[in-house]
Length: 149
Image 1: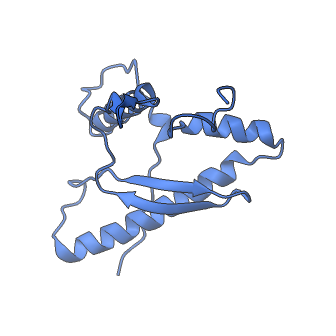
Image 2: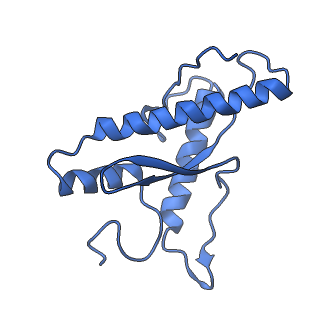
């Protein structure tokens, strides 16, 4: 079981690990199609949240941001489904133990949190233009917001 990246102890798998695993299973695997589905879900979710937030609060342009976590599921036909959106995507330090046993995903969770926070600070311009030695903005996408009525 340890040789298979999606079976065994732990619940976390990084996107690049998942994409490599799926590409290994199917030579016709279309990574771009998966990402397009994820972007479509993200855009629709962001538009919904922006519309609801804009109805309740006055937002200043370019002065508001949020981080949301999306729990996604992939079926056998490579269709992406959204399970839920989290307003608190767990960017704190992960637990070293879960239910009295060592957390098998501790290092993955720690790395994911650090990379996400690093990229967030870079996107907000809090890096003072310093050359980046960690994190990767290539995993971020700018979504074009449609006019909301």
